[in-house]
Length: 208
Image (cartoon, rainbow, N blue to C red):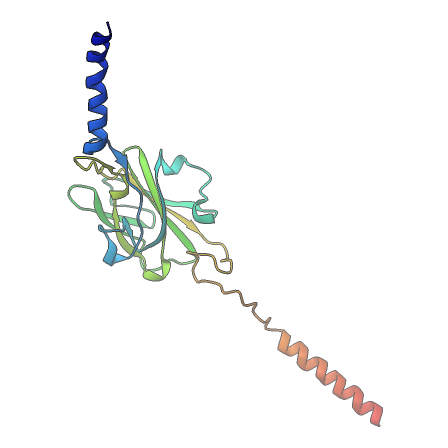
């Protein structure tokens, strides 16, 4: 009886250990951010300064859109293989695992922007560097499962989320950045000159 059980269990146990040691077990990769020089090597979206993911599900259903501490709004979403939607335009390489993105000539009133890359049943989000321009590259590399053969999915859609509020001092990814210095109100010099003028006039009256 024991010999029969061992013949049944042992092969399965050996296969499981071999899968882990030999690298046949798959694991989800993580997102990477950087500039154009890092693209496809250590960055999935350029130019980005932070990222989150890969996350399971669909970014457009993952409300509220509060990644990186911003209260974001869905600005545009392009479903592959379409080329554009709203201000967001895409190009696709062959196969559709990499490409470029752009939003026109200016960010306008946008003070922070996040690009979401969706493929298969996962997505990753990237905080864009608005000071680097209005275009860059994208890849589904962060949505791969690593194993004997990389399983990098084709792009499903790319969404752009934006924030148009005021930047907080030291807030990463908000443009233009705000330092901790408190600005002097424009009316303060006028109030000061009026105060000193009134004091000078009162002094003259006392002398008279």
